[in-house]
Image 1 (cartoon, rainbow, N blue to C red):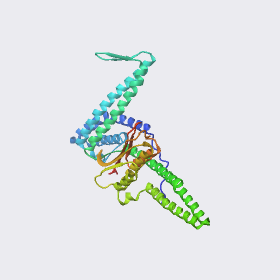
Image 2: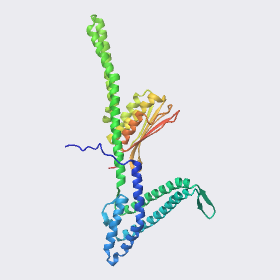
Image 3: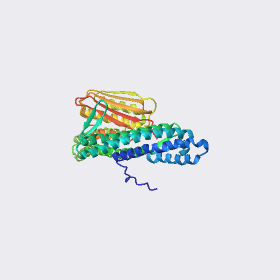
Length: 392
């Protein structure tokens, strides 16, 4: 079976997508001033067996919710029965009135300031206790965007309020939220690919700079032992080759451990982190407070974050001690693994560096996040939050 080609998928740029969403929601809220009262009035006519106007207006209202608010109701039009339509229509009408009044103010400020700028006369805001005047162009540039932003924010609040009310009766899905989620998934997918490429390059460097050099040295030693005419010299070279082979075995084991430690699969995250602490030349305190089992993907991500953070401390921080803390907690209604790595080193870690960016991409693939606080002079705190119970 041929897999579909998804490489050409492009989502709208985020600012443009947000602007379109705001424009739709402003128009939808303003339209509620018309459809809301009509829906409420038609609901009041239901006892008179006048269902046709009610059904027609309810259909219009459902289109408004879907096309302008991007809301999809589980159950369709049947969710808005008689009493529910009455309440929903009243709420829509009030929100629509407030939005239309706000748009009138926006139009008055923007259009008035624009026309006033041609006369090179100030704009005056008159109150009972004082008056404020300013250049028309300055008022246009300051109050115009501010009023438009306030209209967008009010529209977002209106959608939120109506979603909460409708959510009391049925399941409500915001399709524009799904679009944002798809954008996040495509971004994290690209991040995973970059993280894999970085890991491959690191493995290639380890093999080329370490293992390969030792293999070449071992081969040269064995060749010298074969050519040696003195038995004592040959025995000495063979002993040297044997020592080199033992060192090579240990180096291969270390490279394999850096790729993925067996202890993580065989004994779990705590044992793998204890091994990191044991091999560290400076003290590493590991504090684990985990309730319940963790998925393998979460354990792997937490291990690599902790190990890479400890490695960075050993290379750059000149620290005297490191503390690694893992705990599970409820965060925004989801069970989350909280990992922090704290050191008393010199600080100055660059969050945009390749190593930390690779960790951030690895964690982002699991809907998690990584933050770095590392002022000059220290200390450095690297924090990762990884959801354990992921949304489906």
